Length: 446
Image (cartoon, rainbow, N blue to C red; front, side, top):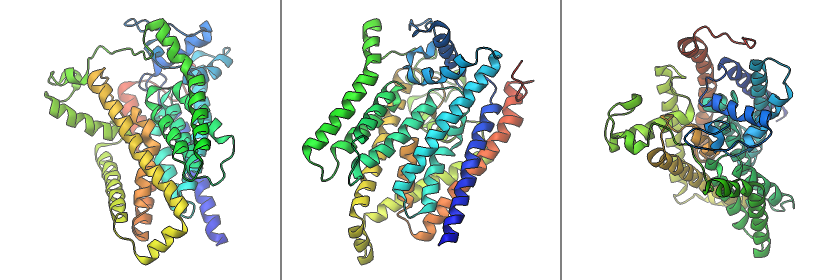
């Protein structure tokens, strides 16, 4: 038994080292300003540091602090700290240090909450625990956003923390008094980060309200704490918007129109064929692909292999849920009786995960079709649902037979690690020379 425990500790050490090595590598192989919208994020940060106030949003001129002024303050305030503290350094170095600060802070928090969440879901399945962490932390798109300045990595981190706190709100036999207060603070931070993370607030509220066996007064008090802190910490941003701009939600539209308009233009901006139906298929296909990695980050054949493995994993998860719906054997029924509380907690998390994925996907697709379109295929918006995707898939696979689930988990972890090695090579040797010729890694003084 001790040998097994030692082996798993070593495996976690290797996985953790790989995680931070990959994160650091992605932070230095992406030229400054090359990642999606990073120049605009940098403009917002620079305005906060130089002007010591919030920028005013004035469409269509893209506002004082750039077009990302539409977003709330939290991520930009955090990311502005290293930039403000390194004023004596060359500009490029200040931005690179800011990237490393985000990697160190958001990366550590994401790893910590993913591990704690995985431990609650798979306390007796080390490989399942590792697969869940890898499904959140080792997805190539996660590393892409860990490696540059943006608010989306905070969305992912908050979502992961939210599911962890929700699991405790719902299933802890004797939850500590601080738990609803922590959930409320997180909900408020979510409201100050980005609109697509708001479904996690609903998950936290549902976990508190649906807590099995808890008195109604206790559940109501917890819901009041969470909702109250959410409004106190995050509500001022939306009140400010309503006062200044006559709308609690502000948005800088693109010049490219909506998905519905795109559907009427054959091949416009490198887009899909003409027609709403074919545009919808193209959109859903690319949303799925870009949830895992940035298009072109994997060579074509390897990209297909990765997507095939992910599709097999999802099919196995669906089969696992379907099998669970059948009448259990005597031994399975006995096991269920012995672990009824954890089973109920897992059931809640599974449903919360599915509903979160649905909310985020509907929100992203609605924005694509009716508000504006950037042809980014929606992957970064799905980062809000990535912990939910990891939970839903891995809980489904866990219901398969022992050999099947262990093989699936092992193959998935290996696929994610290999995909990142391939993506790093693709960025360094193919994409950067093509789109940023002459740029050299660590050429920070230029």
